[in-house]
Image 1 (cartoon, rainbow, N blue to C red):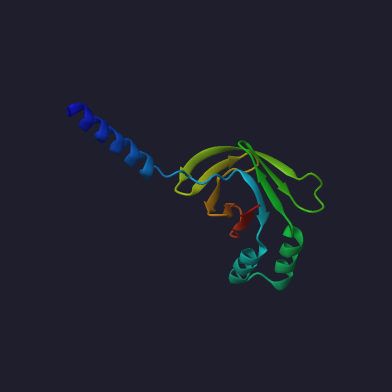
Image 2: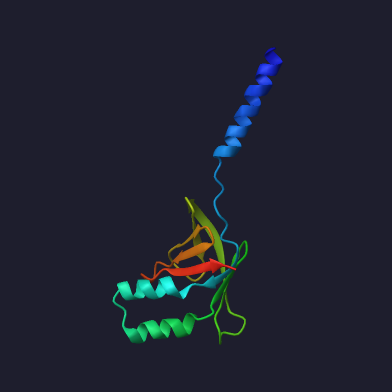
Length: 132
């Protein structure tokens, strides 16, 4: 009886641990820019119409490719894109803080479902992407 009891308790403990462990969504993959929420943000930040049109033109059809240590930003007219090395600094819930080679401060990459928000400390505008 004791063996059966311990087996049941052990199984329950393992099941509850697996069930309670929350895996942080991965930032890795291919992402396409989502201009609609970015335009809304820019308007709320009182950006000029000229600035908003420039942003649309620059980022239209933009893509982000993230692997385990590189971020590649592909924007029309940039050739193969810009490549940045990164290291994960820490995790905050669904957000991954990245130390990026070209930035003094960490960037925050937050995943919610198929949406990725990139918080670059050098700008108040949050870049928004959808998983491809």
